[in-house]
Amino acid sequence: MRWFEGSIPAAIASAKQQSLVFVVVITGEDEQSAQLQSSWEEDKVSEAAHNCCVAIKVDAKSETCTQFSQIYPVVCVPSSFFIGENGIPLEVVAGSVSAEDLLKRITKVQQVRGVAKVAKYRKYTILVLVGTKTPIIIDKERSHILMFCRCNRISLISQEHFTLIADGCNQMIVLILANYSRKLCVVFLLLRLTKKLEDRREQKKKGEEEEEVRREMERRKQGKEMLDFKKQQEDDKTRRIMDERNREKAEEKAARDRVKQQIALDRADRAARYAKNQEEVEAARQAALQARQVEQEAKKDAAVRERSAIARIQFRLPDGSFFTNQFPAESLLLDAREFAVQETGHRYGNFSMATMFPRREFTSEDLNKSLLELELAPSASVVLLPSSRASNMVRQAQGGGFWAILEHILSPLLAVWRYISGLIAPSPPPPAGEATGSGPAQPETLRKRTHEKRQEEFKKDGKIYRLRTQEDSEDDTNTWNGNSTQQM
Image 1: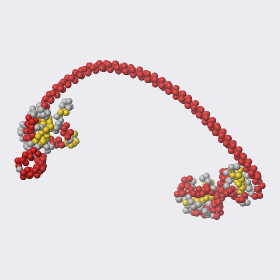
Image 2: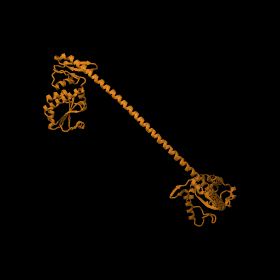
Image 3: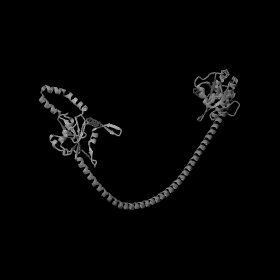
Image 4: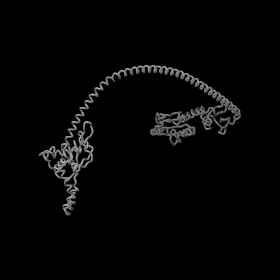
């Protein structure tokens, strides 16, 4: 047996190309599969299958068999499938069969396939058999004619008796034996008659198709007219509904306008009555407001006079610390300077005083002016500016060259020592009666200054502490009057 070596798609393509039956033989490893393979290997079976089949052998456990079983269910193993050109199984042989039974199945498949070919090509081929007057219509290809004659046990002298007769656009094959060639004219007549009958049938079919098209066009036209008529009726109905709805909307709008007009009149009446009552209430409110303003202005003047009688001065030192004291507003700036000298203990030597906001440095002439004249009341912040450079020049003129050079070398170290001692050592206490909070308890004063310095470095907002900025210091040192205007 000559098996096809390629895949199933290649075998199908080969079978279609040769117009043969596609045979799939599914075998396993059992004894029945071995018997079926031996039946296919018989000479007579191989010869019959070679003339009409393209056979391929598939293992039952392979992926190819799984894919094949999805299209053609494999009931048992082994089995043989005879499949026609259109994919329909012509015969299925289940199990193991003998060579004679297998040959009968192949012959049966050939007969079924020959009848199918005759039915398929009825319009193209005429076969004139020996001793008959009626032509038999079969496939137009020579191989199919030979197969048909072989299956139906029709004897032929040779293949040379095939004659191709051209009639119009159709080509027809006529098989005639040599001793019956005198019937060739009858065949020609039959061919022409058949051609005329076919032409008449074609014309009739064409006329029927045209009539069908005409009726279809008429039916579509009537359907379109009916749809247009229904659409016109629906449009008229919709238009009437819209007109009625618009009329109802216009009536509702007119009713709403009347109601709105009446509501507007009622509101105007109520507004007039309310305005009259409101004027009386407003007059009473204005009188009470004026009386309250007069009282507030009197309280404000009293508070200003009271605050102006005392000047609260905050002294800021070069090392960043500060101390505060209250003076009478009529006190001189010289009193404030003497208090600063007592607090610092001549630590900074000769110094001058200045304010930062607005920027102003006080001179010796300003020492004889009152705090009120210098706009330091009711509160102000004064910065102490040491004039160390001028004192150094005086000392150099008095001390001589050697001591001047030595002091020049040691001046940075002395400056650092002064800064550290200013942070660590407390300043001497001021005289009793002048500084607020001054007394015999010096540690208490130191604690207050340390607390004020910590408050200066940090600002508390609820439970959150944050570093102070220049804007925060300005807000803390500023005062506010009753009109919420900032005043130094």
